[in-house]
Image (cartoon, rainbow, N blue to C red; front, side, top):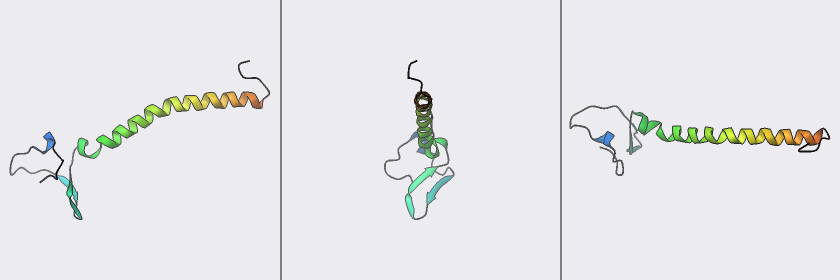
Length: 79
């Protein structure tokens, strides 16, 4: 039996059907199906957002470092 609030089309099984589930015996209300949605959807979304933000931040850091390196060699920015 799924815990309260776990309404998903993935939980609509026929009575008597067998499926692999994961649960902690200490927290029997926290039941997860062995599928991508239940196990990896949130971590994959967070990782994708992190990668999307990493690209512009890396470019910005590279630009700032080049700008600061220009000051350390005595050159003026924009020259």
